[in-house]
Image (cartoon, rainbow over all chains, first blue to last red; front, side, top):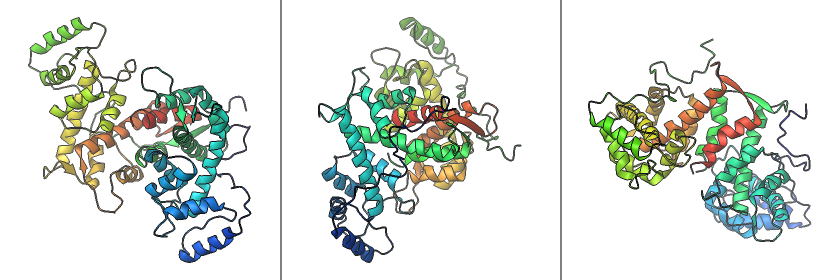
Length: 225
Length: 225
């Protein structure tokens, strides 16, 4: 069965994309009091999970100037600029779409921010593994391996479609920066997670009604352009 | 069976979206000689179907300045501006993606242009039917009926997702111009046609492998942004 099953995820990583990696154990005792502080300010909102690094909390609080406990796309873009990369608004919107709390569709709270940050940290490690010359870009041939590294076994035909997005039409090979890699990876993650929800027996196939198909796919087309 | 089958297409129209409506019968005898002229200039490319109105041929030729027999996205945008509407580049790219000849992925030839023009003419008629006050916009509540008019029975949940794209987040109702209506309609058309290819027995459901699902959906995410 395993030979016919189009595995979604690589075995080399036990990373389950819908359950982002736990942040590294933190020795910052301030974290607990920050959590309580946030919980007091906005008791109805999420708070940072125990062990969230101070760096993550600071990045969030720095852009959440009105102290509302939520940050919007511009604020998220700023917050990630310091820790990771200046992402395009398109990538930011995709991140919000995939990490948001369904009850707070347009913004990100502490819990969602911590999960997003952790995921990006993991992906950056993979990206850097392939950016051997530290140019800040990876070769398209390495994209497949890098996606495998973050947990996705992407078929060649699917990879071709992804790469066509980043070409300039001249046939010249285009290298991918971290923003593009994150965008690629998040598109793959999002669609694959949706498909998996319908393939509960992990057969590699799913039977979808027309309505289910459309409601799975449309948010990717309309939510983040 | 018909009660459980999620029909894709309304019965009120026999319009089969993958076979655009024939252009109205033309009395312009010049048409034939124009076809032959085009066929002589570029014998390897498509030519205008017999009966293509002069207006359509003229619109194409006016922007195909190098006489190559193909027009790109900017030229298509110009050509449609005169006959229909100034469409956004996003809508233009979606039109090219859906109407192009698979062997000429980035541009539109005479045959494709004639089909596209005909489809837009049909859709404009439907749009105008609902734009009773001639404001150039339709009410979101009418979008469902208008989509039904162009041949698609869109489930309410899917409609909600579509409409979320055009809101400004304030909850205030946004009306849709012809550009937005075409964009909506083309997204619905494109995804529905793809799904139908896999539901050959018209059951309203399709069994898709992971790879098939991804290759069906990704072009909508990467080809036309």
